[in-house]
Image 1 (cartoon, rainbow over the protein chains, first blue to last red):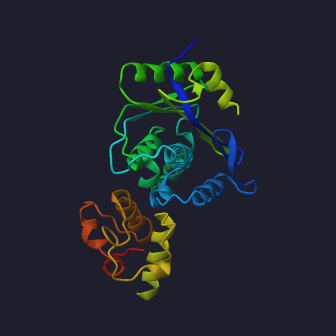
Image 2: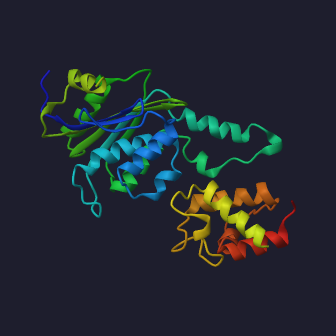
Image 3: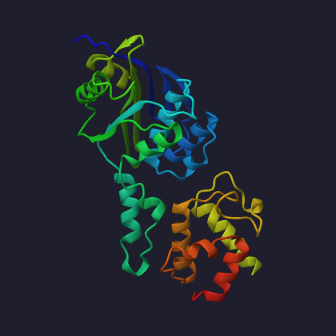
Amino acid sequence: MNSQYHITSFCNIKNNTVSLNGSVIYNDENNDFLEFIKAAYKSFETDYAKFFKMDALSKLAFLAADILLKNEGLKQEEENNIAIVFSNKASSIDTDRKHQNSIQNKEDYFPSPAIFVYTLPNICIGEISIKYKLFSENSFFIFDAFNAQHLLDYTNSLLATNKTEKVLCGWVELDGDHYEAFLYLVTNEGSITHNKQNILKLYNT
Amino acid sequence: MEDLKQELKENIVEQLNLEDIAVEDIDDNDMLFGDGLGLDSIDALELIVMLDKNYGIKLTDPKEGRAIFESINVMAKYIFENRTK
């Protein structure tokens, strides 16, 4: 099926490697996820202290989004008309478990507000929206597996109904040691046609 | 009191994930919120939990924290006078 929309750029983060448009831009084989994502963040020289306060899922989503949006030449002092459509399987289970552990023992019951605020997956969208002043549509879907068709249909609908000029979409999954981010930006222009076949191809890059 | 101030600085840096701030960079009179360390409302809630967990001080009104968390000096004095553990 032909599409009038295009994928302008895409970012993959998995297996201790960060790739932009299919090219490796950061790799660090020796660290666990939290050390890896912190080292990757520092290597890209993003000056945003709130990054260190985020939970693991938000750090993953934020870094992938930041790499893509940095390339867009956005004016950070202005509102940007970019919608966000994310998805994953594990929701916010990684942080949910941390919160559960903090309230498990009634004799040692000290839930952390800083952890509790991340017990929803779409909080990561908020983190990106705050940094880039995005006030447009946003959604976070939970699927059993990466669902290219749903992302395609939802994104095309947002663009076709003029709800937004661009859509940042994809998959941000994190559960314990397993993590994987695949985000891509869809607009009217670009070299890669926005269709299911291409989304799946880039996801598996 | 000096030990308590040092302990507070270490706990604040570690528990509030102040990655870019070293313990030795925090002056006893620095404002913890606003233009000082730049802590936010979630940090304030974390400090309230820290008072309860580490020192047995329960703040029932979060607004009380505004005065207590002004600086390390003010916080240490309050803890010294009110701690139950």
